[in-house]
Length: 485
Image (cartoon, rainbow, N blue to C red; front, top):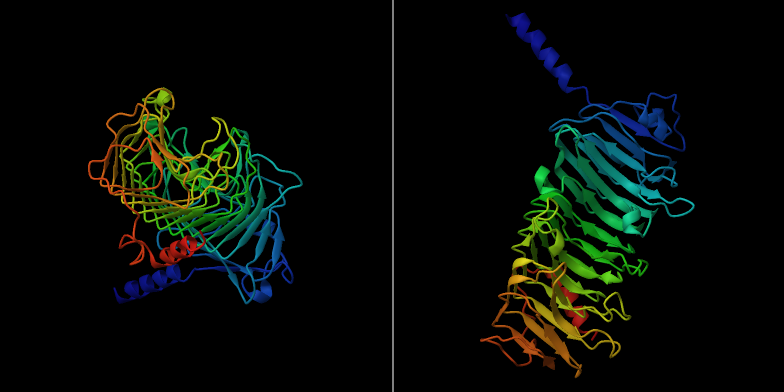
């Protein structure tokens, strides 16, 4: 019996000591090496793509090295033993150049329990190509696909198409679904990544969007990323339940889209229970929409809170629902959106006419969006650069026929600074729209009925009225922007 126990212990030790580390060095490596140490490093991505990785494996690229081609690994980790990709040695992030050879530079297809850290990725071809991406995470007919973590990555110079219906292009893109087995991601994390000069979008996904086959991804977290010089959408979770989008910066979106193509900074589509918080969005310049934030159709229970929006051409926020598809599998409606404790400064700046003419309301609510609550936000409107620019604080209209229903505006501050021209609120034929306890300061026409309205200039001398949960680093940015008026 003692001998049996001893042998079993040896076997268990052997099973727990099989972690492998593979080294890759494009300068001094050789694919004929074992890959097991820095002095025996492999050289190429092709060598990595020939391997089947196992739980607990590590793949380390030498710092400061560069590679041309695609990283398309095989094999999965397991719970508690992910396959980890990182760098070793001193120096900059290893760079993987896709050179536009394929629609991705890194492809994680049908894999789970993978972590990518500290890499730089490009995918620039000779000319823009629809559907080109930096990183694709793909799963089909796999069921629940667990634990894909992307951290501290740089994704840049991806020249997809700026035209959305051609296939667009993204820095990071995930896609899940199934013909036979419903498939979703569980524990998808994209954190502290820098994405820039990517056409069309920054971080987006696709999944089981129809409510007739609803199988949403779970525990999707997009946190702490910097997205800039991206002309289209910054961050768009799709087909998720409980997605968390927080502490991101989306800024400096170049005006490259067609007038037919809409885009916004951060918004969910076909999602339930999304929380969007502690983000800063500025410089969104899409010719249509162009807001910082949006609660779009086929979404329920979206919360947009504690964010800073400023200098966006299309405005601060939109809530919308396409009326002529309401009730179909891809449009259960837009319901129970909460927009609270945000700060908007100098939003709604579009300097030319677009599809409906001069149009850039600070707040836009379109179609049969229901039970929307807009509460305790501070809207600071600075003097527009020209008199032609739209001076609508609010427009409510009827996308696809029906109008918004049961919208409440409670205890917001609408503050126009240094502009005597008329600003307007347009509620149209919206149903059961209520205003209560809002502050209005400016030359307003069509001002809504508000039984507890406060009509005097807000006093910020004793401090800006931040909510207690509004983060300190965003408070500093708000104060700095106010001083630039």
